[in-house]
Each structure stands twice: as structure tokens, then as C-alpha cells.
Length: 385
Image (cartoon, rainbow, N blue to C red):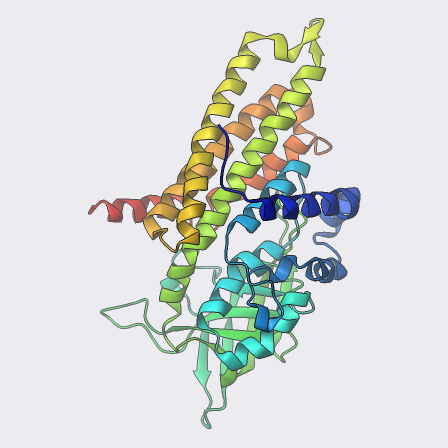
């Protein structure tokens, strides 16, 4: 079906991103995967292109755009080339939402210029080794000093995207214990400087996919965080996290559609060229039927995502909507990419073929941003169950 969600501005941006990927990302992406992340200067290059500041208000050095659709363009073009922009998606698609909503005017003036330029890269630390999706169960704590000038942070986090290269990390920590009535209370967000004494980056985690995006363990031992780096109100972080998850889950669904579409296109090219029993793989009825199923599934998910982008731009996308998007989109991508890999035969298992990279990278989409089991719980609650 013809899509109508993008304007001429989006398409002009698409051409810029496509050229950038062709010239500056695709030729060296394999090196990034081997290293585990892009070179630090890559993020400064994104800053020069204006990618990191698209949604930052103009008074802080950004472009002042408010549409989620620019994220979609980047996701689609990266998937088209089977590459990623490292951890920049967290920087712009996740962190920025917190800063825009909850940072004070002083904090915005202090943080946004380097955020936009890529001089300072951000990560967010929510998950802990023993809690997983149970954010209310976190034990990392931050105690206010006797003179009230700083917090003393202690604890550990894991699965932190961009944690190896991050300069500032939004750390979720308990500033007061949970109550018997509300175990979600008492969690705050502190913006921690990675150069702080007692801040430590542990091992870079060895993942099966997303190899060009670093994921780390972090630990905090008596890290002093100025009270000026408290983001929002003390004790309100759980509600901030829940609110921002709507955009995060939409972005995950956008990526799922983009990768599934790319997988379909890569597979059509492959089965058209590859011959078995003296005829193209595309000539077999099974191939045609499998790809017809894939195309139909993608179309259904894409319709959901496109409608959701319009709703999000009007601030009308609900938490239940976002949960449905993530659930349906990521499950669809898993099915489609698995079928596409199967049609590649043994070559589909080789990382020199983009389908293998998409297969490995997509699997985590059913886990991060809240597992798909959590999405089902959110949806069920919206049904009054």
C-alpha cells in the first residue's frame, strides 16, 4: 500500500542519511562490529549532520523538529543497508525525551549544546543484575549528603546500551525506600558524569547481535553526584520511566518494521539470483508463498506503525497502544526474518550476508524496552483484566 506519512522534508533527510550511510558507514561497519562500537568521532560526525539535535529546541542549538518520523527515516535507511549508528539511537530516541520533559532551564543550557554536537554522549542505567524487568526492585541507592550538596551513589547496573563510551549516564537509584503501599515510590534519576571518582565501567558484554552497539556493566562506589544533577523531582523516576516508554516502544516497533522490510528485499534479490536444480529459487511455489506471507505481515505491522507515528506526533499515543505495537511488530519481525533466512539456505547463516546480521540483531527487540510478556500485561490491564 502507498504510505503517506512522510513529507518532502522527510524524504530530503532520507537522501542525506542514505548518502551518509553509503559513504561513511557501510564501508567500515564490519570494523565497528569487530571493535564493538563506532569510533568516538562518529558521534561528532552525527552532530555535524544535525542528526543528534533534530528534536532539540533551536534556542539550545537544535533543529526544533517534533516529529518521530525523522527517527523512522534513520531506522529505515540503516535497515536498508543492514547497519546501525551504534548507540546513538538511545542518545536521541530515549535520553532526549527525559531531558526535554524533566530538565530545568539551567540543566538544558548546561547539557544540550554538547548533546547536540556529539561531544557528550548519554546512556541510561535502569536494569540491575538481579531485577531484570522488575524496575521497582532495584537496589542501587543514592543518599543525600549531610550538607545537602550532593548524593552518594552506590550500586550496579547491567545491559547498559552505550555504557562503554557514555560521558553522562542517567542512573536510576533509590533515594528513599519503597513503601508498603507503593514499592515504585522513592526512585530518582541522577545524571552522573562518567569521569566521577568511584564510577566504573565493567566488562563490555559479549552479545549474539547488535555487535556495533556497546553494552556494558556499570558500578558505582561512593560516587558523588551534585544535587544540581537530579533530573526532575526526587522519588518520581518510576513514573517518568513509564511515561517515556511509550516513545521507546514505538521506536522499537518502527525498527522492527524497517528490519523486516529490509529482510524481505534482501531475500527477493537473493532468491532471484540464486539457482537450485537449474532454476532460480524464486521460481519455486514455496518461495513465492513464503514471501507473499512475509509481505502481508509486514504490511499489517507497517499500517499500525504509520498510524501510531501520526498519533504520537499529536501526543495521543497511549501506553497500551505502544505495547500492542511493540508486541505485534517485534513478533512479526522475528517470524519474517526467520523465514527469509531459511530461504537463503546455508548462506543465510553466514554473517557476510546481511540477513544473518538482521536475524541476530532483531532477536533482542522482543526483550528490551520491556519484554513482550510485559507488553501483554500492559495490554491486558487496558482491557480491564
